[in-house]
Length: 169
Image 1 (cartoon, rainbow, N blue to C red):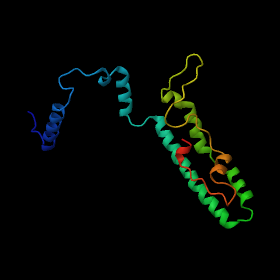
Image 2 (image 1 turned 90 degrees about the horizontal axis):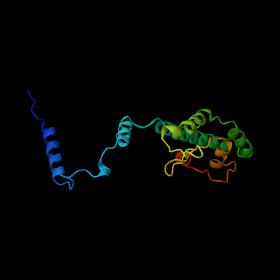
Image 3 (image 1 turned 60 degrees about the vertical axis):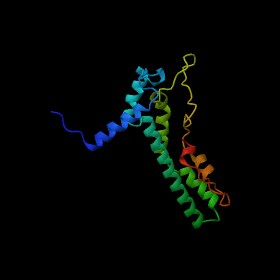
């Protein structure tokens, strides 16, 4: 026995019928670009699983960079208030000792697996993966002392570069 149609189901069915009625494709075969080829079906099913591994890793890298930027900004401000006289030397020491192990591990893993996970095409002559034309930079550069000093200069007169996490990723 068939259950009665809910009011919501009836409204959705009527809206779909109206949408199809106005469609210029009604009663005609779909153009090739609208058809699902085996490749598009594969991509569709992959996308149904949510963000891909490299996308989740990039998001984690962005979050880690943002966390480091906040911590560095706070450390720089505290050091500037504590000892403005010898700030430059002490800030360089802080920057040299900053621990980027976790985020650099993620960056290294990303650089290693990204071409495979993103299915980048390979040049058969060279064996190198094609560089993506859009999106984030690849490969990502690891964070280091120079990265800190570029964004948080050792000169108190120089403004901090409040670059977003996206400048790296």
